[in-house]
Image (cartoon, rainbow, N blue to C red):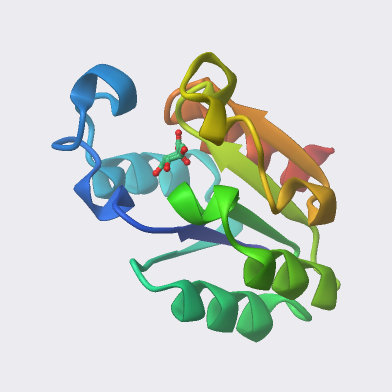
Length: 140
Ligand code: DQA
């Protein structure tokens, strides 16, 4: 059984309530349940944290064992050298995802500190960005 870790960074606990015009009306938990039903042969774990160190600890914990990490680092995407170093330190491929198309938004969101360490980047497909990343990790 393949093992995939989804990591959601700061403010993504508020999905469904937070700026719905940008991030939609759906909370992450029901979406996660639907993903698990869609991929019953895959173990899909999820961690959300508003704390940078928790995201790093999770990458270290699964990064030598799991088949892939789907990482939405939220605003840390644009600031965190520590996350980039963590991604580079592990073997497991990391796919960077964003719900919104960050390139259509403020200029500070156009720069990602973590992309250079990631296998690829998916952004702008709403919550479907996560499924597209998982699809690659399972079948790609
Ligand atoms: C985000 C985009 C980031 O710029 C922002 O800080 C987020 C969410 C997205 O999923 O679209 O928190 O990563």
